[in-house]
Every structure is written in structure tokens, then in C-alpha cells.
Length: 190
Image 1: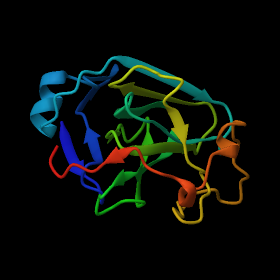
Image 2: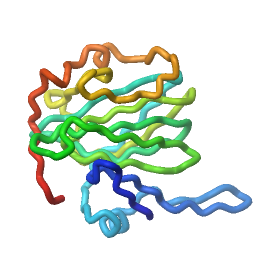
Image 3: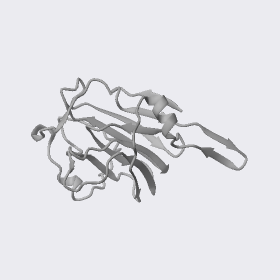
């Protein structure tokens, strides 16, 4: 497993090995011991989520769960392609309000680790895209929150290429970053 820190070092690109032959391929997409050895993180993943987005330009985010029910995520694409975004919303962080992005696809086989204290979202780049992700905290409706995907302060450069994003009603009405009071505190060491 190859691990690469992105421009915000707590957000990690994970590249598991994939072994192919004339039949196709085999891959161990997650192994707790290898993940902990490679990242220094021992995470107890408690829930797997999966979404299908039929239309290219489907935008989901920017989502997070507030304390006391925060979630870290390990995201991968089973079919299609996405542009995945993590926004640092940890008070006191040197990268507070900054974002990083990584393209994930069934072809590149990459995963992204998004720690607690980050808002997360993605836009689909192909039809019928299936995204799967692990979380380390159970869904808590009371803690479910988000930020406006098109917030001018965050200025996320979504690759819309002339498309109008397909949004849920909830994602179309999320609050602005300027009005946001973060419930997350930055901790310098993992």
C-alpha cells in the first residue's frame, strides 16, 4: 500500500496494490494492520456507505458530522470517476478554510482518507458512478451538517465544464463558510 500526503498533509491518498492476469485482477482494498502500519492511524471503521449517481455532474457535499459524532472517511470508486474534495474546518489549523482534491476512479484505483474535522464532497465525472466509503462513526442525524458547495470564500474549483451540478435539496441550501462557527479544534499531532 502506497500512502501520499496531499497538500493538506492530514488528507491522504491511498493506493492499494492490484494484481492482474488474464482473468482480471485481485486487490486487497483494505487491511486494518497494513493501513495502520502505512499511515500511523489505527481506525475502527464501523459503517460502509455506497452511492450511485446516474448523471455526470452529480455533486454531493460539502458534508460533515459535528462532535460528538464526527466521522473520518476512506473513499473509493467502484465504477466511474469522481473529483473528491476535503475542506479543512478545524479551528486553529494552518490550513483552515483550505481545500484539497483528488480524482478517484475505477481505473486509477486510488482512495482518499478524509480525517475528522473536514467537510467532504465530490462531483461525478461519468454516468452511473458508484462510490463506496468507510466511516469511523455511525450516522447521527442531529450531527449531520454541511457547507455551501459553491461558497465564494472556499472557492472550490469544481470541474463543472459547463455543467449545472445536480444537487439534492439539502446540498442546494447549505450555509456559507463566512457564517460558519466550527465545532472542531485543530490538534497538531495525529
